[in-house]
Every structure is written in structure tokens, then in C-alpha cells.
Length: 60
Length: 373
View 1 (cartoon, chains in turn orange, green):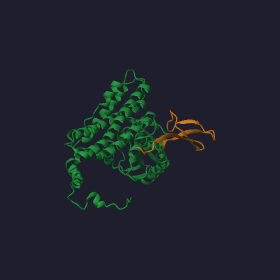
View 2 (spheres, each protein chain N blue to C red):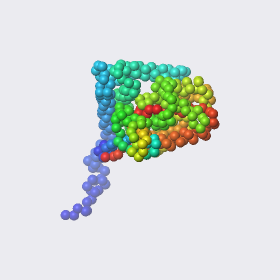
View 3 (cartoon, each protein chain N blue to C red):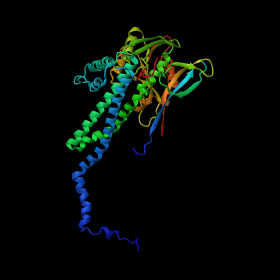
View 4 (cartoon, chains in turn brown, orange):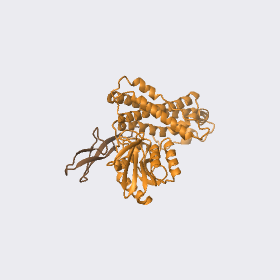
């Protein structure tokens, strides 16, 4: 349709530290899988686990 | 010159019924609409439907191309897969005769499972190096491509038949169902990127919640593509059941439940699933209820209900409402954010409906794409 806005979905990954519970949101990278322990936490020496992977849609 | 004193009656000869020109102006459209009204409506409606069919054709071609590219680029196919894929896309399923409904569920289950097994084996033959996750992803992509192909063919057939017969009433049902069909077809097309990259879908919220509960437990495969874990919660024995992720599958939860029930005394079943929201309802709202919350063709639900009835086990359900599109495309933030709330509702449900020492089964129903355990 002429007046409909184009929708763009951006994929995000939310990581949570298993020790201090700090949440970090970043853009999704290939290979990200839910519940995978992937990196060290920036706030403590704990490991972060992927808690959520989702898409956010915005009108352009 | 004064332009304000027009006499409209004089200009259109409205007061004079005998003006032949005015008679023609009024009578001609009436004659035209009486004799050619349907053809005019057919013409206008056809234009709208043609646009929809063109879109459907685009979806069909796009999904086929995506599938071929996925097989060629990711799976290292040993030979050119195009011919085989085109053959798969044309496959059809003839559902059993239902004139005598006795035993129809077993017949439908047999037909559907035979088709699944056949597809699985033949998709596997495309590339011997394919792992289980890639296999389920290819199967889902194939399912999407063949569904879009079938939708396009049926809609095009209905349209061309109406045009051929020049029959307006024939085109009416098509005009009515087309918006719903387009919504489903668009959702299917948009599901492709999420399935290819192994991301969780909206329908995966049930498996996601149960998968999280299963994280630190010992897992076993209890039925085809179905995973079981046993754990304890406030002195209750929990049997956690979900499709085996992170591949794109719904597993066979009914078979899993049957095995659990034959080996254990179960006091309650809790099912967590995505449910279609009604128009006007908010997305990602949570609702609790009774009965087996599971979609699909109906055979799984029938089997679960039969098991529960024979053993007199109550079934409780928690559903997360969403639209068709949200259910089969990448999970939205709103749906993902319900995880903690649903988990606490599950725990509350366990406390309310069972006592210490009792056993229950918690089933995360849905496509487990991108959701491990």
C-alpha cells in the first residue's frame, strides 16, 4: 500500500550473569542460542548466560 | 458577469420530465447495473484478488529459493538438490475417509506420521553430513514452501474457475477468505529467516519455560524428538517434557506422556502453550484454564486426553496469547518477557493443585526452534 510504513525487525540477545544477575542487551549474533553460557560478566567474575532472544519491530 | 444566480433547475431541466437527455442520464446507469452489475463487481473484485495472487506467487517463489539456497550453502548437498526439492514440494497427503468416524484419529495419526517419516528420510538423503538440527530446520522450511505452494495453487484455481465461468457468486467466498489467507501466508514467509538462523519463535514460549526448568537436570529422549527431565519442587516429583531443541520440531509429547504414565503414578498434568489471541486482545497476555492446550491436527490432543481420562488425571493449562504472525515468526520482546511471570504461575499451580509427595508432568508445547534444554 502507498501509505503503509515499512517495518524493520532488529534481533536482540539478552545475557544475564549467573552470579550477580546483571542483564546485558545486545544485537543478535549468528550462533547465539538460548541458555548458552558464553562470556565473562563485566561486573563480577561470573559467567553470562543467554536468557532471551527476541525481535523488536519499528516502523520506518 | 454574475456567476451567483445560476438556475440549476433550468440547467439540468430538473423540473421538466420530458427532457430526453436527462432521462438517458438516469435510465442508462440503471439498465447498466441491472444487466451488467455482476460483471462490473466481478471486474472490481478480480483486480483485488489478482493483486493477492501475485503476492502469493511471490511468497511461493521466495520460499522455494530460500530452501534451495539453504540446502546448497549450509548442507553441502552431494548432488544438485533442485530436482528433489521440486518433487517434495508437489507431495500431497490424502486424509482418511471420515464417513465412518470410528477409528479416524488412529488413521489420521498413521497417515501424518508416515508422511513425516518419509519426508525426514528423504530430506536426510539430500546430504549425508546433515545433523539433526539442520534436518529439522530443512523439514520446516520444506513444510513452509510446500504450504505456500499449495495455498497459491488453491487460490489461483478458485479465481480462474470463477473467471472462466464469469460467475460472480463463485468469487465471493474467495474475496472473503483472502485477507485471512494472506495473513497466514505472510506469517509463513516471515518465519523463514528465524528458522534458518535457529532463533526462537513465538510458539516456542512453552518449550522455553520448560527448557529453562530442565537446565541443570539429567535429560533423556523419551519419544521421537522429545526430551524428558526429572526434578523436584517443594517435595513434588516433576517430569518435565518438551520437544528436543534447538532443532525446529514439536516432538511427540503424547507418546512421551504415555510412557511416563505407564511407569509412574501421575497426579496432575500442566501444559504450557502459545494460544491464538482474539482480535482486540493484547499480545503476550497470560491465561490459565483446564484441558489439553495443544494445537496441530488434533491427534496429539486426542491421545493426551485419552491418557488423562483413563487414569483420571486433571489437566491444567497456561497459555500465552499471540497472533498467527507472532506465533510463527521470531519471538517478540513482549512474549519473551512473560517467561518469569509464567514460571511463577506454574509454581503456584503446582502448589495449589498437588500435595507433597505427589508427581506431575509439565509439558512445554510448541516449536522448539532455537530453544535447547
